[in-house]
Image (cartoon, rainbow, N blue to C red; front, side, top):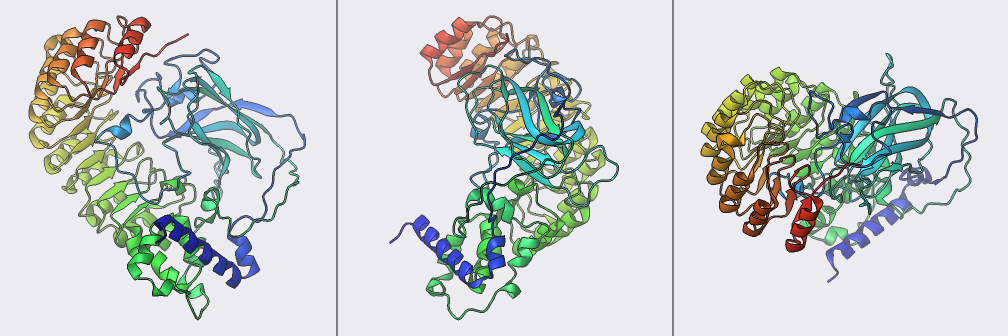
Amino acid sequence: MFPMLTILSMFYYICLRRRARTGTRGEVMNSRRAIESNHRTLPLTVVVQQYAKEVLDFSSHYGSENSMSYTMWNLAGMPNVYPSSGDFTQTAVFRMYGKWWEQCASAPQPFRRTPLNFHSQDYVELAFEEPVYPTAIDVLETYHPGAVIRILACSLNPFSQNPPAEVRWEVLWSGEPTKTLTPQARQFSPSIKQINFATNLIRLEINSSLLEYYTELDAVVLHGVKERPILSLYKMPVIDINDLSDSDEEKDMCESGSLCKRCGGSSLKEHTGNGFFDKLPYELIQLIVSHLTLPDLCRLAQTSKLLYQHCCDPLQYIQLSLQCYWSRLTDASLECLQSRCTLIQRLNMSWCGNKGAITITGFCSFMKVCGSELVCLELACCHFLNEACIEVIAQTCPNLQELNLSSCDRLHPQAFNHISKMSGLRRLILYRTKIEQTAMLSILTFCTELRHLNLGSCVMIEDYDLIASMISAKCKKLRSLDLWRCKNMTEKGLTELVSGCRLLEELDLGWCSTLQSSTGCFVHLARQLPSLRKLFLTANRTVCDSDIEELANNCQHLQHIDILGTRMVSPASLRKLLQSCKKLLLLDVSFCSQIDYQAVQELTVHFPNVSIKKSFTQ
């Protein structure tokens, strides 16, 4: 018996050959690019060099919404730090790095059918003053470089009063996630592709999973000419129809629904036989087809009516991630997918639909048809969402357990009131949203099944002590809570929280400066949460040896701990923590004045399985 992947490869190969034989020459040529070319630009004008004028959008940042330290807004203008290296507040820093966050219980489950060449975790979009035809792009990286994996250009001029009818995104450069040998600063200037439109909107996509610490970006320089360059083609190889590589799958993704229309059953020619495929059990063909990505399903559906039936079977769309196709997904795409997604349970539309690609009407129509079985809905950075969309989700998704609205910072506060109707929610991500206190209290009152809650950087909540008290009373099953940069929690709220939520495994209190160790709140925390696996006390200057020793005595399942910035923790208490917590994987002691590099080296020698972080500046 052949291995499953071998069967799949043979199956796909034969189907593509059949399509090549039966389709017209035009259909074959349209299935992928028939010309591969490298471009040469003739020097028509002086190259314009410009720094970013404005940061338009981003998925996350380490900094606060009300300051400039470590925020994406630092990417606007000339460099603040470069060519210096190190950890500087004047740079742009994303929220996460490495594999640590993926190891936590609060991390979302991966989606099937995600293309192997899609690695993006974060993004930032930058507007420049003058539209140009790009000739080069420089990214000034000042700490732990190597996270930039894609650079894209957009045809939309963000400063124009007359937006184009169609917004195009073109990949200028892409690469695999990398890990540099040194955290030192560098100027990253990849060789970019030439495009046939002028742009002043550039997008960087980021993957920090291989990095040892936070990547820091200082500025982006766009080089380009104002006149359209003359492109010369000098390499025109013939592309075999059978050589369908992953790099071209986005090209075959439906643009304005065109691919879905092409693969419709009515356009398929009648064939007298299906080889041996129609002799196979239906379930076996379904299993084989389930290994294909979405563009491959659309391609395969064009080969025969038998395969069209399998590729459009709603059982193939139980879970679907559209995030990797964010630049091409439109209302028409959703309309074409409606009939296939009637049984969908997990849907990821994060990053999709912005700049007019998806309308409120298009999204609501899709949800009304496809929302009844949804359990998980990821909508991070979907700026087309409004109150009507959230209301439709509440009405049409009775089984919803996971909702991610991370960085939907343009969603009106009134919209969040509808979330309280989703009483079955177990995971709710509201990072960087404008949810207000009244809506949050309503959600906690009715959504008592919550296991994972993220309220990081929710600056519109006025009284976090009241929120903590309500969480304690209503959410007894809570396993993870992210209160990153909550502005006013005191020992009263924290004491109530940990007394009522004894099952907490993850607690992020990073940059919660109103918590004071002298009140005993951290000692009480350690004694109440024996199952704790992750604790972030980032930038709390009051954390001291007694707090660390209580954690060592009571929280021996700890895996990740961040005490960056404290001046009151000694190497001796850290040694006790490392000896007691055998499962510890990550310990951040950056800017801890008593913990110098020699102490870090000594602890690393004795505890080699723990990644001890100590950032630096030069």
